Amino acid sequence: MIFLYLLALLISLTGMVVLDRRFSLFFWRDVRRARIVLPVGVLFFLVWDLFGVGLGIFFRGETEFMTGLLVAPEVPLEEVFFLTLLCYLTMNVYGALTRERPNAATAPADPSQPAATTEGSAA
Image (cartoon, rainbow, N blue to C red; front, top):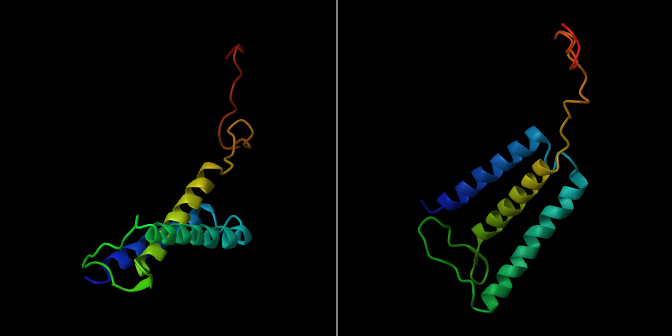
């Protein structure tokens, strides 16, 4: 059970990649931008964590579900994967909310459907 939390994070990250691929939300929309935004976001939050640890605000909780490996004092390995998931999720949500959807009024008509009548015309 020592790798359970890390495994859950990796499964969740896989889900983010699948959603991103299916709906072209982040990496599949603009890979150049995504390769910059994701690491910058993760780095920002890692620095945030280090400041929090230095100020005595953040500390590592002990649990049997974590590996126990640290990337910095009081910053477990799983934190890097959690921050990656957090940033990826945020960018996928942003990509979903800003996605251009086809407008029904401008979408091409389906030739197999009968033509719509206009209001006021006699049938």
